[in-house]
Length: 80
Image 1 (cartoon, rainbow, N blue to C red):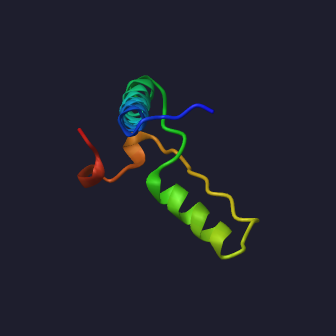
Image 2 (cartoon, helix red, strand yellow):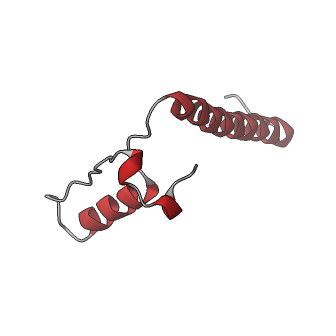
């Protein structure tokens, strides 16, 4: 039977914690870099509405977006 000392258990836990934090940071940065060049497929509002529909039992709801030309957006809402 293999016995692990308390110190080795803490070292192992600390190793996996650091690895998990680095993975989250890496995925976050990869998303930023990826969506700097590609269009974002969904927004936080779309995710919230979709999850809300699923949690209320409405499985027929599908979140969607309609992209419009920059000229069709009111001047005060443009980022230019």
